[in-house]
Length: 147
Image (tube, rainbow, N blue to C red):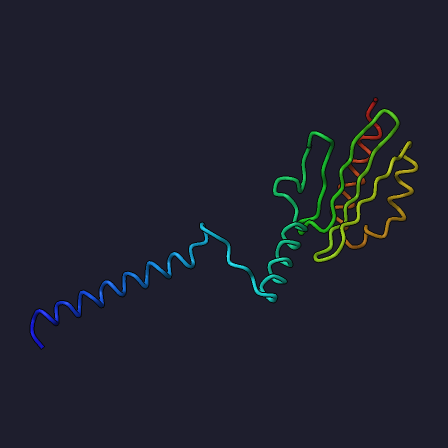
């Protein structure tokens, strides 16, 4: 084999490598087009999206928002929004369960006695006692404020 033929062979190999890499990069370039997901990966992707949607939005675990006071558990499974309105105390309870439906309850308490009665009989107080004690304290404060 002569020097010229060896140089030509190595050049052909180098061009072939570059062409293969270019073709591979073009084929897997996600910016150009999305590759379809297989059935197993599609189920996993959908599950991850549902889990992400069930997580609380950062910054809303506790605080004073535009619509009222927000109290939530650390894992985001339970959240309350309290708002003092002219007719009483508005309470929105949201229960989030991963991969299941979100339950949202809206309640209006016209007096502190009604709110205290509901607090005494609400079964969630056993699952999240710290959140429930904050709820009771904030609710009492909002009900006792002059409107």
